[in-house]
Image 1 (cartoon, rainbow, N blue to C red):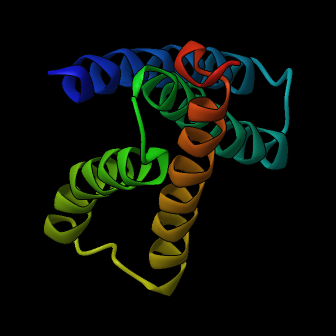
Image 2 (spheres, rainbow, N blue to C red):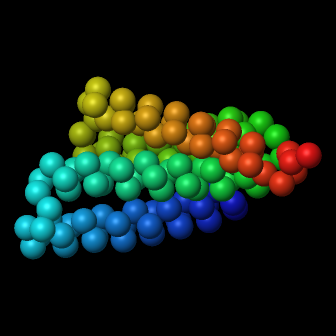
Length: 118
């Protein structure tokens, strides 16, 4: 249940950030390169934040929490990618970054949890 709640909050954040970036791009406030970089950064900041919060709530093994959450995200992103046949080596690298970001963020999160404080 915690993963689903975090997932839907993250998808809402990503949609709002992508909408904001799209509006700025539409009115020529930002260029195409800034738009692409902004989408990339907003996704990874969102993954970092939500994996960090999941790790903070965990009792132990933050890397496992991050791996579960990262794999959940990858599966949710992989299903449309397979049906749209847009799967490539670049996409595989992208999914690897999502997984590693999720694992590292949850490991940092468990380090900041109140349960581990002296």
